[in-house]
Length: 410
Image 1 (tube, rainbow, N blue to C red):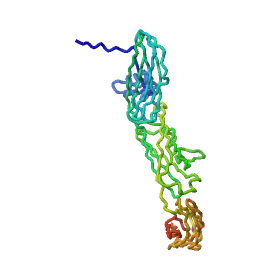
Image 2: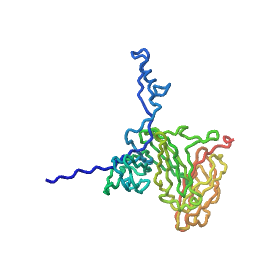
Image 3: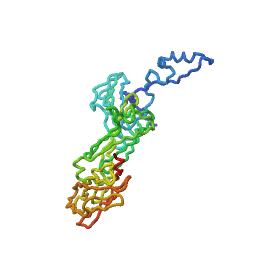
Image 4: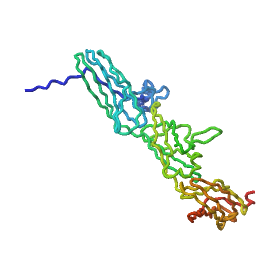
């Protein structure tokens, strides 16, 4: 009859503990009115309780801290910290101890050990301690693999591993919307929702623009010479609450002058979000590069550089138009025609030659109009004809002006 030898026990013990900040101790206050049967008994017990705040015993939060009782949740963007201890439980001296800690994610395996050098010897009742840190950058299942190898006094090489599995959750839900302005500006609205179960202090939410744009944050107002946040003095975001951040991006001069460059899908930049949770634990997320589809303007784009808001009835006013050849290959020979409407009349010569306009280049044109009707009037009736292709481009409802009588204006 064959008997299997008993499994040899290891001389070393491995313990792993996640390092997190403690939480404020909470208690459930039990009180009653003095005319009730217990009288002042409950109130006196709360005053004698060392965990309550002196003078504010009925508050749930106390002055003491509570160590974490379980692993807890870890969120994307936070720093995972763990304490690893290898203890010699035997009465022998163990040699050549090597402790290795790896973190296995769905896409990679990372070595988190501070040192890969072996410890020469470990005496009885002594231990080897290590603290590892890792900024979590992936959601989903993570496995912490701790491996220990050593040599016994008899020269036998021993090896064992332990696995610790945990889930990384998403802390924020980020949604973005783009709005294209007529002046080449792009407005980005970022909606950020706290999908954790605890409040967050939003330390920073900024937009890092791509090389094509300059950015202006529109999340503060100027009050008495000071910039005040539109969200108030407290930057807390409660669970399931959402905030909307607004940014204005304007093309840099070298790109704005070359309209042919900003076409199709363009990279806007990425959001950088920094927050703090329980007792100042820090988290940080950066989105991937945000992209938007640049609006199509066809072969020729006509935009307004200057126009007055209010004009007088039957008095000439001036506007400045910018004409851009959006083609990257073809030169155009343009002719400008001005067609009157029932309320707005053009002043000048219609059918004049504007000359050749090379690819991705622009020209500015000053035009004069007058309105014969009061109220909000639409500027329409411009026609550009490319004599090379015999193609005409029509531009109506270019802008609107408020027309008032001279007496009202005075």
